[in-house]
Length: 356
Image (cartoon, rainbow, N blue to C red; front, side, top):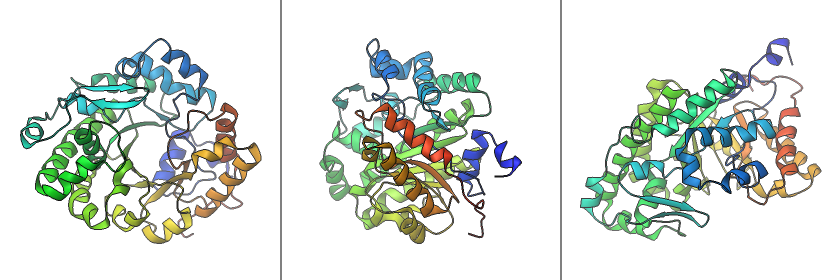
């Protein structure tokens, strides 16, 4: 590692990985890293509801910082929820320990047409305020990540009203009224692009789109209905000149289409190794992931082995080490620390270059 590499801030390390530029080690963070596995987070939740934390910038900033202070992760993701825009669009949301619930899910065209394209500086300003507080606290040396739900995944919740295997109401609309679904997806894409631009203006240096339920779709349905809305939303963000990370789960059958979204980074689960994924998507995008969250329930030796094997699959070029899904609530704190430490201590004998 050269002196220049050693002097890299965590922000520049993260951005270099997003841009597929040479790094001496991979950056590391954890999806859902502010969560119930942390005693400090549980202490806050004893006093405040989930939505209270989301909507109170001081609380959101505090819990966002907890993994950075406790685990030493290389990036901070603002504490929020993908359903925050749903409420701003006109659908009341409740998020409890049993998961999210929308009391009046979408069932007809009139409801879809009445959804608002909201002003994120008004209805969801608390998200931007939390990001501004984070930037003030950590300065310019640490990357702050904003996020939102991708059009299809948010539509699944708006139509179903809750998490449900297969999201049959969303599938019903897909098969019976595909044009109406397309209208809904396009509306979500416009609203979400505005929402993410506000997070970027507040100081986020990257944003992540969660399309967790894209894997429920066939390749043909994804390309016909979902891909255009995702592409248009990401294109709207290009002017902000920040990396866009797209997360999907159970989507190995969609990889050739996911690379067409315009995302700079594809975040993937553990069902395929990163070398196989790289062979499919090519060298035009970085990869994030993809350790099975259950690995963190194992011994330190097991965690270190899995981390090393995962990093070796990418040779360090264009890779952000993360889990293949959110960290599990029962994860021991020692397991989370071991994961971060193993990733940060792994060094390449030669710094990866774009030539391979």
